[in-house]
Length: 404
Image (tube, rainbow, N blue to C red; front, side):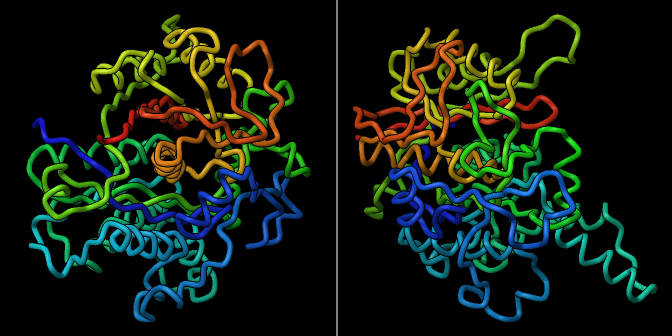
């Protein structure tokens, strides 16, 4: 149970970049991709902005036989898994089937598929697939399709903890590595920018209704008024460090520590759980707060949630005690895909020794954060902490560090 877990491959599909290189170039430059929805006409909805993955044509990346049985989310995930494996220098056909597994996450899976099934129901009358069946199938489809496509018969699973799920999936992958599986494909891609998915997201009351892309998603800003949703995420290849070293793989960094908590029921007087999740992740990694060089914030964009996060960071690291960034201000919040995308950004930041900026935000001094805004900040980076929270009280924290 002591095997170290390292990241050897990244496959990124983000609103501000299709592919890891394009994503990182846009992120380090502060290029935002938030704009008016194009995948359907949003005129009748109060929220009309999103981060959409540009230029993804499924036929360019996947065989035609897969298209009728998949939706946009799964197609992007399959392509991102291919990119991650290629980046890691792994050909699944050359490895034992039971030495490879897949663990992903889903928060919004099934909306587009379910909407299609409802359309069939309305038009045909005889075909019936319940929404629950749609969601249940799509919660598993990303993991299952990646496994089948690549002949991976090792541990498999899907975690569902809303926007914290992507980090939870990577943590589960690390558990499987520690139990002896040499390689796991993990992370998450989410996509539900369709009318049914949009209505479901609006129900939580946290979507920004601003019409200005540059002022719509403003975490830690006095004018914060909700978040902008997005689609996409990142798929990672994680391996046992010794196995990766033996095959001469390049290594982005190590999954060093993880902690997860659930917030208490509102109104009972107990504190939120995010601070405890941070402390658990640092203890798991054997790190002191002084050894963390940057925090990638969850950045809810809602005043009370931003304050909870700022207070948790301040309690652990001290006022303005660590640089904080939220590159998701360029993409929107990507549901379970957001945590893995932040992990990818953290590993790329460590590789370049550069903290990417939080764009468009004018941070309120009252939060007491050293928020990196406007421009990237050169810095000595060895260890990064990534935070993610999900609706319903999920809190996850993950520490990644450079490998000597």
